[in-house]
Image (cartoon, rainbow, N blue to C red; front, top):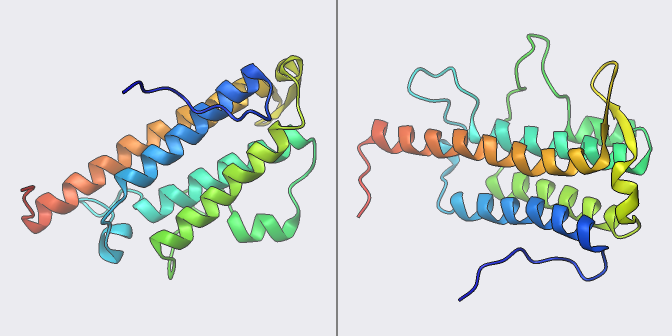
Length: 176
């Protein structure tokens, strides 16, 4: 069996490759979350000071959604900002996530991925070099932004895997 990225035939080759990286990381993330209980979803580590899986999923969806709106060249509507944000709370930390299920959080994140794909189907490979506003006073290419979405997801997947390991360790759960 050959493993490869699954490119969207409605996208130009290079954009399709970048979006396939984002999508592959989303699929890897969903597989890694199989069996997460509601307690594990909100678990904050051995010292109870880490971001929970729920916080990290909400954060990933919000950051990626910001990139979708940058690529569109539009400001994020306030209704969307309220549904997905904010980036941080009044203390500069990821906001607490309460009363959300794993399915709900993954569905919200999947919606963002679908929005990215829809927007990227309208773009050409040459547009990947277009710059967009990124952070205060900086710009980034669309290409870098899509790559960043994939990289950022993998970065936080490591945190999620560590949380899952700690959760099992703390509860004396052994793999069979």
